[in-house]
Structure formats: C-alpha cells, structure tokens
Amino acid sequence: MTPLEQQQTQLVDPAAHTFWHRVRFDLVAAEVRDISAGSVLDIGAGSGMLGDYVRDRLGPGHGAGPVTYRFDESSPILDDNLGRHFGDAARFGSDERVPSTTVAALLDVIEHIEDDVAALRSWRDRMEPGARLVVTVPALQWAFSEWDTELGHYRRYSRPRMRSTLEAAGFHVRRCDYLFPEMLPLVVKRKFLPDSDGDVDMPRLSERVNRFGYAISSASARLRRAWPAGTSVVAVAEATG
Image (cartoon, rainbow, N blue to C red; front, side, top):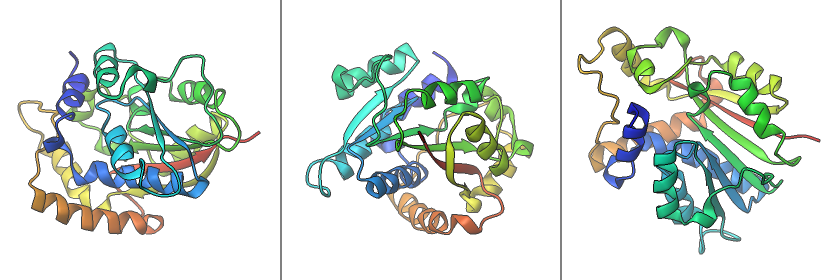
C-alpha cells in the first residue's frame, strides 16, 4: 500500500475528517446548486468522503431534488473500498460520458499525475457541454517539500499555472482562486521544519478545533478572490461545445 493509499484508507474513519475537507466540499456543492446538477462525479475519489457529504447534505430532503454520487478511482485498493461503501452501481464506467447536469470534482488529484494536461483533456473529451469541473491542488511550488514527495506529488501550482493547465486541456475557466491563506504558516513549517518520521497522515482534530477551523476557513473561502496566496488553488471550469 502506498503512502497515499494508506492516508486515504485512514480517512474513511469519520473521526479523521477535518474542516479543510468540508470547505472544499462546500465549493463543490455551490456549483451543484448553481447549475441544478443531478449528479456529482468524484474523480480520484480516494476515501469517498465527498460521497458521504453528498449523501448527507445533497441527498433526499436537501433541496429541489437528490443528487447522485458517482466515483472513479484508479487505485484497486481504494476502488474496492468505495464499491463496498457506495455500491458497484456508483462506479463510473470507463465508456460513460459526463452529462451536462453533472459537477465533476478533482480534489487534490492532478498533482499526482505526471502529464496533468493530458489527463484533464481525456476527461474534457468525455464531458458534455455545460458540465462543470471543480479542481483543487496544493499551491506554491516553493513550498514543495518531503511531504509532497511522500504523497507522490509531481508539482504544486500557482493560480496562473492552474488556469493555463485547464485552458490547455480545452476547458473554459470560470474562476481560479487561492484557498486557505490562514494555513500558510503550516506550509512554511512543513517546508523548513519537516517531521523526522515522514508522517503523511492527516491530523486528528477535536470537534471544537474543527468548528473553529471551519468558521475561519469557510469565511476566507467566501473572500477567496482577494487573496494573493494560499495553501491551495481552486478552479471552476466548464466544458464548452
């Protein structure tokens, strides 16, 4: 099992979920509501946390109509876990097209892919016009550290690089912003004061810390157009005809 698979397997435990994950999922939900999407496609789904969010917050009883969760995962270990949790019917087929009523999510995925443009283009070619894509990636190449290497990252991104990568793949970029400026000190610490044991696990936070972190980070996410830097970049793109 790779360090990334190990990390994602541990994130199946709800106790490992953090405010950082929820803020990103909120951004996906905002795009679902904007186009009245009927489904969310989780590309590189990992632990499937987004699927639990969709079920609990966008499922029956939450809004005009329930949103269907589908997943695509290249790791056989993680794919097997996802199939057991969500059912094999939720698995997105390799020959399926992405409908215009779908929001696809690539949450911290393409930094793990050597040819990111080719990977994005392959998904763009399967998306019907109007389908949305939400992408998050780690930000600031100068912050690349042993932690990135352990997780299999090829790069970190600036906002211009994220935009140009999506455009090169054929997407229309609706917006591209930095996220989590309040977490920049943690990235500096990871870069210049790395842990000696190479631990790549996500921290376990108390409920109180998670509530406080969510209040701060959700507020900064709403103001994301203003930030000149952050620990992540988030882009919203669209497939056009």
